[in-house]
Amino acid sequence: MGFFDIFKTPLRKVPALIDSLWSKIAEDDYSQLDPEKLKQYYREEFFVKAITNISASFIFADGFSIKCEDPEAQSILQKIWNNNLEEVQSAGRDASLFGNAYLFIGYKNGIDIMTVFPGKVSIIPNPEDIRDYREALITHIINPDLQGVSQTKITTRLTSASIETYKDDRLVKRVENKLKEIPLIHIAYDRFAGELYGTGDITEATIKAIKAYSDTIEAARKNLKYHGTPTPVIITRDTEAAEKQIKNWDMNKALLLPEDSEAKFLESSRPFGELKDFLEILFYNIVILSETPEFLLGAHTPSSLASVKEQMHPIIRKTKRRQLIWKQALQDANRIILKLLELHEGYKFNTYETEVEFPEPYKKDLKDVVDSISKLVAAGIINEQQAKAIIEDYLPQLVESEAEDTDYNPENNWQEENA
Image 1 (cartoon, rainbow, N blue to C red):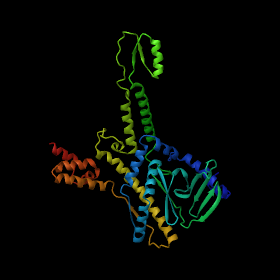
Image 2: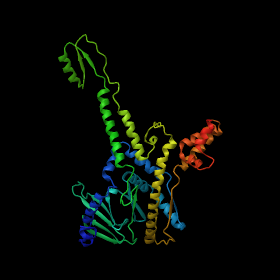
Image 3: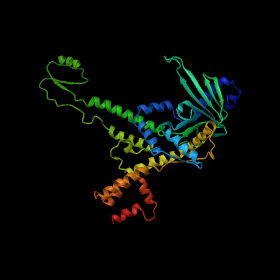
Image 4: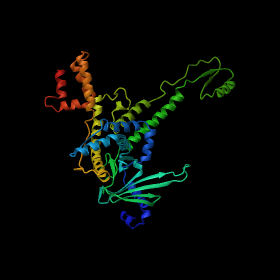
């Protein structure tokens, strides 16, 4: 059964048919990992939560601003987003973890912005253009009774023409979609051409490294528990009585020796064996694959011998890349918001076009650092050369801006200073 068979199907069976088609599409699209499994990894596995939250916090650390030729529209939009930062940050976490995030924009006594769990969304694209979403389904399973025995499936079908609600595949409500576009914003990270879904920070390769790290830690824990406890040595004539006593003590191991024997205290000198070196290799795999600086994951000293400045480059590039994705998504959301306000509150805006701007990553923090170091120089605690070295090692922006100057070449400066 193909896509266009939907239009030959009784209306009550449409959601079930779309679910079936969606399953087929999902089988052929390897760009999306199972959202439920990823959610489980977020709660259980080493590093997953840290990597996800760090990535999301970098993108929205200093918020974003709205620019519009209509001053009234600009003011309203900025206020709406300021009041919905929690939803935006939640969607940012979803995008980092799942590779996909969804913002549903509706109107309920005002603009209502809601994050939708990616596992509840099914998208049917236009067969001729995968970027054009023909329709979207949002499915919720609810328990109407207190015991949770019976379940009801509620499906919302969104198209540019209508918004329909189904209860267990039975149409219960249909309203005209006066927006003439689907009020669902899809944020997809790092997707290749022709892919419907994006890829987040937790890829299959990253999961393998994290699970290997977790398994190794568990093996080390068991090894330490067994070998880390010293082995008691019992010297006695009555070994039979000693064996009974050992069982009463609930001891895992003991060494029995005849009387007048000589024994030393037995304990393992390296309970971790070679695991420490292996863990370090896995750790750097995780750092590289997730584009996350090692010091943000808990390494107090950069054991890779890479400076803080060098480690910041990958995550700043990743942040800028994803801010571009969010910029387009938020501009699409702004258009929907302005249309809804015209429909429900009688506004008349000059334009729906907006510009979303993100501040340069860490510009604000750089200013704070420079101000603090300036006070240290003024107090005579450090000199100007020491201050410059601290700033360069803290963040890459200053070094990058200086490197663009024709008179500045770090390698030449080093050679001159060491000539």
